Length: 422
Image (cartoon, rainbow, N blue to C red):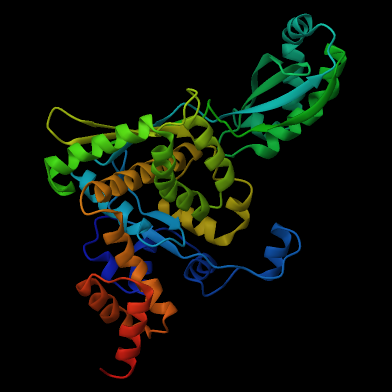
């Protein structure tokens, strides 16, 4: 396993970085070409993935370094269009590395399927009848996916909820399904649809909705790490980080932006590995609100040694089999680069990236402000917009940073002057 502490990684050329992160990963020649962009996604494959295809949009794929997760050095692939995300995660991970890095755990790979039953005359009696037929219901569900059952997964339990609304009382059955290394939407939805006629017979009601829930509260991932106070900028910065967390934990206006920063890291890894960014984002934000108030997904404290201790807990419905994870060649290659061998390990890596991202954002906010680092990196995009040649970008950005003027109009002036040889 490669050491992810690579000094000056950001100074290397894309080809040099590529060689470092792919060495010893057993990628095929095709996977290497897809990962490097030499072989782009074919239009035939794109057309088979979604409907009405007319083209593709490329998103940069970067590598976050310095991550040690459960004692294992891991390069973290991140697909994002936003400057500073990859650098910030890498810098925060570096501050945790000598304290053991990140430690993760997961509650399991359980998903919920919901079956909504309407027009039930006696919902409480119907609830009892559902439990009387529990074994029959689970058996019928498991017939739908014998492969999943053979791997130790499948429908494991049921819950029955009675939900009074303004207009009616609904009976809602939850199928509790272990989806193992798959995200599980297809398996769960198939089970819910197949068993619905049986549910109607038992309850005397009418099944309408039958679909997975993306509030995967039985599939929680947790990550924690200790970040060096010295590396973060000292005691005052760390004290400010804790205060910033408390602000987010009590104020939903701040919490929204706070959690958006966490999702900068999480969604980038989810996308890079071909998983469902919308499902993960919806689950995370719902979980942040589960207490009745929208709160921070992370917790920040100062430990007995005076270092910053951070933790995160959120639903993480991701897989390493099925969906785009298996159909998109870059996603397959990204998983190999990461080295995650199970859905649980992948979830832990994603949570670690989210925690690191939050640490970096809070550190920036608590020290020089978010714009200094973010805009310095964003200035490269502005230089490209201004028409700068690749060979001139670093010089143009350095001049703008020196002047502390990162507005587009000034970068345009510097670019034009550079092109005139001034």
